[in-house]
Figure 1 (cartoon, rainbow, N blue to C red):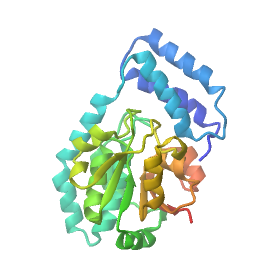
Figure 2 (figure 1 turned 90 degrees about the vertical axis):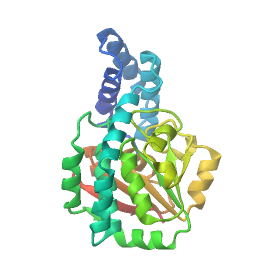
Figure 3 (figure 1 turned 90 degrees about the horizontal axis):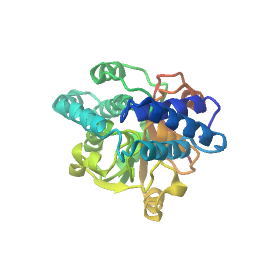
Length: 281
């Protein structure tokens, strides 16, 4: 997905919000906004939003002096969802359609996105998403792909949300590689975050090599690009991965909540829609 003009105010707001996780010093925050603003004039509209996000978050780390500004936030959200994990397992086990219930819960977890908002109520989000109608729901191709797959590549999005991914991986019960970011960016899931969520119990954890808040193939490792090419099935969680991979030609199953009006418009749905979308050939 390309960058739209409406993305630029969001980039500045994202930088300010990220900076506030590590400092309330207005001089430092003003420097951050000034430098990000100067950088944005050189960002072409052909860039994907995660490419710009990567540049912005590097500047946040540089000015704040913190390599992982949202480390405490990620730990807290992961522990919060682990605390209700037994209830989530019961919901799936008691469901008439365990796979669909696990998908709905995985999408509910997509609300844990500090690139969009600092506030969420995970219990409320679960209740809303369990009963909500999908605007796009390619469930039958998804079922068929899971059934046929000998291996699945599951590209994660955010820490905390990753606990819900674990539940879906368990439900699919197929050999899975769970993909994380190479370095901290926003509250995106890294290797340590995935281990904290218990993903190492249900999948092999692998870094894409990306330091962007999304997956940009040209900046990923050669090994990851080979995994992406050869996987029987690719699942990509969240808005950042949609932004980075939506134009790729191979089949990809995107699971997300359209929290951003620009992304909703690009997909062709209303803001706040829940989506299971198959793209590619």
